[in-house]
Image (cartoon, rainbow, N blue to C red):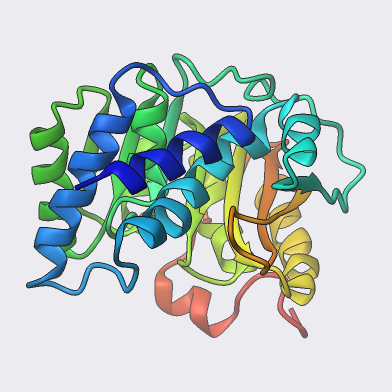
Length: 273
């Protein structure tokens, strides 16, 4: 088991311009085994099988690293995997560019089965990662998996973002989120975690132009700016995907994020707001 998984990850990571650390492929294989075993008794993810897990779970998570690298654009364009489709004039001045994640702090909002946070933690062992997951059973799976893999750079917090912010406001360098909420809602939930100069990298489907416009307004309300909109294609897939990147440019008013009910009732950036 695992030969196809590790082969696809190795080739895909190389095409993204990412050099994986020693032992990473073994850890991804073990993660796949643990995920498959738990998914049989608990609905963690609809993604299954070595090929799908490699592409849609692991490489899709590693795309965050590629999107943050100064050199990722040219490297991945040559491999027909990634192209920079910047829709913002905001300067790329974040210290996270140029593959400088080592020693930084990251939080993954709504980690679920561990993508992208746990996947990135394996690829970047010197990055300190918090997996934020409010659902108790999923948080338990993440904690058990971290222990089984022997990872020392990852912790799990079983809480909601609008509650956990009290412990980590303006502390972090990178926030990630995949399949959690609309972009304008993510801006309110995520940007308050960032120190000035930090980045929010959010996975979205390709057809989210309306969301991006809303989110640009929401980001400004909480001290951020839309920085880049990256479009890429995974190996073996024709459907384009996106990672939308926001930068933290100013302080966030302490009234944000609001309670979840208030966010749902009147989301920032929505029509009429």
